Length: 459
View 1: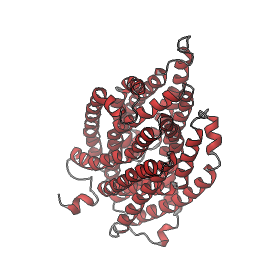
View 2 (view 1 turned 60 degrees about the horizontal axis):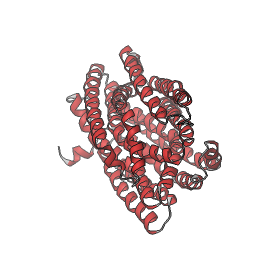
View 3 (view 1 turned 60 degrees about the vertical axis):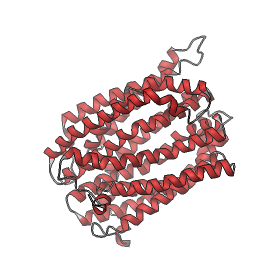
View 4 (view 1 turned 45 degrees about the horizontal axis):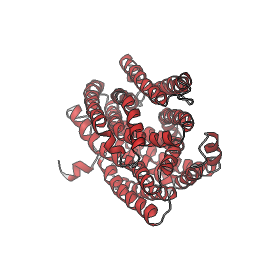
């Protein structure tokens, strides 16, 4: 494979399905790992140079920031589905209109979010019972990220477009460049300039903006595939509505998950700074464990989208079986590695042995859940790529809002005692494990029912 083929769009309607899926997944997986490094390096730097409370502050702020990003995540998923199906069907005009509309809608949403959300940060942190010892750090961290949200938003949108076109490598290269920038600036702002959590937030904003600009420059060179002029930037009503229809369920799914995390974060806050900091460490290691699952899920979405656009449903089913088996196998291997060596990774965040032991104890509870998530993400990716974005949304709603959050609060309440007046902290992670497993079971049943086969944009 030459450089032009590697960095160009991939036609996933031909060739051996599992090979296409794996080759498409690998650069995206590396890219997702690099993106995970943003938050991981932030946590490591503040944990090592500022302290465990600063680490807790970054962790408490993360679910809120993720909630602010759900709109752009939805647009990214929606445009990715549209691009993959239009690209598979060779519809250049519709492809151009969809891309132009997504760019303009993202600009409008970014400005609106900056204005509205900036007034809500402090009250929201107080509502969540954020400890007084970390609330100022949380506030400044979120405010800076919010002011630079356009860079993060456009990277998500542009990388979604590139993936839809079958190009998962270019976004990876640009993200790697930005990751290096982020690491260098993290250390400079915090270690040299003593900016604390504000420094890591500023480093993230600058690095994400660089990756967004690089993605845009790449897209502007793809003139043979779509047209991007002032005309295309005027939102097209049909394409905008389709984007909302496809992206809203995914955005709602992310919003549901973020709200659930925030509700559980409030519960976590009641246990104090130690569990908050441990939860940060767990979620950072968890993020790396989840990366293959999300990468295969995105690859399956593009694979299904292109093949559904080309009318190749037999190929979609064959690829779904092969891709899911590989995803589950990879997740199993990574889970075993984390169980064996997870404590070594955790010492990168803190030198406090008790904190590492607490984190590892909770991580062992979650271990089996990663395999269930692999199945969930792969099959959900197929359904979304085929145009059925509603089913994964409802499954997420059931598994998080109806199962996970009530179970967490009930288990904490039932485990309160004289020894543990706040309840058992393990309850929070047991509820997450149960929700993952039940979500995977429901997703499998929904996939087998086959309603996703009737949702194509080409029908």
